[in-house]
Length: 254
Ligand SMILES: Nc1ncnc2c1ncn2[C@@H]1O[C@H](COP(=O)(O)OP(=O)(O)OP(=O)(O)O)[C@@H](O)[C@H]1O
Image (cartoon, rainbow, N blue to C red; front, side, top):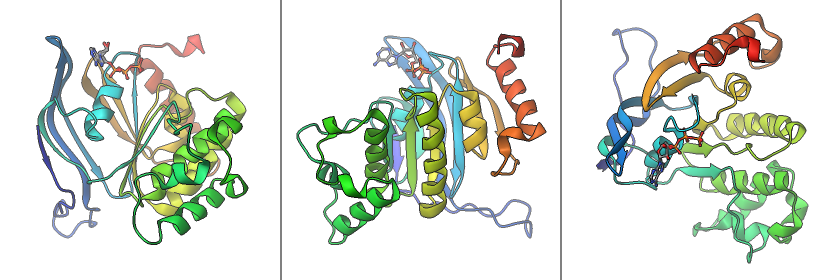
């Protein structure tokens, strides 16, 4: 697999039409097989600066595999990919180091002079400014995910990659985390790719939704709905319904 540095500028489509944001992720023909069994079949994906992309798909459709390739955690795929050098990553399991306190966990891997101050600011941002010296085991699951989000953003990444970050949380905590994520994304403006199997989560948070079906992108759609009051917008219900159909789940099942 060819992995290049980021920063590719793509000329605006249509000459004097609206200037498009620079490309942050450019994947072409991404193909991956495990033990001879094809899992991803020639995925083409472009993500631009500031986009929030939700990646939906049924279990086993290849979502996590694609995310791991974008995060360079899997380098066995074929195809070409351009991604920023150090994306922020967050997974369903917070993956905090149990032997390190909260602040060092956020600082993980950061060496620059103002990293500590930035980590403290991020802990304040996620509402855990007073827990900097706590051990991960002293935090609830939701708090641990807050720390994981702070850590993912600590390096001021151009790209934030998340795989079911709220999948293990209870429904109320999840709603609070959605609000927090929206605030963080609007404050720090990374491009986001969020893997989820939760249709509501995708339509609530993202401004573009992709559906992966058996290793191929079967739907790619902009979400032009207001951020505030989105859940009660008629467009939300309509898109939710279409996505459920695309995922092979009838509306009647909900
Ligand atoms: N390391 C691996 N070795 C062998 N097979 C793998 C490996 N990783 C993933 N697979 C297979 O690839 C397919 C896609 O897996 P992947 O985890 O990407 O799906 P997913 O859409 O994220 O599913 P889920 O929503 O259940 O997490 C599955 O059939 C899985 O068994």
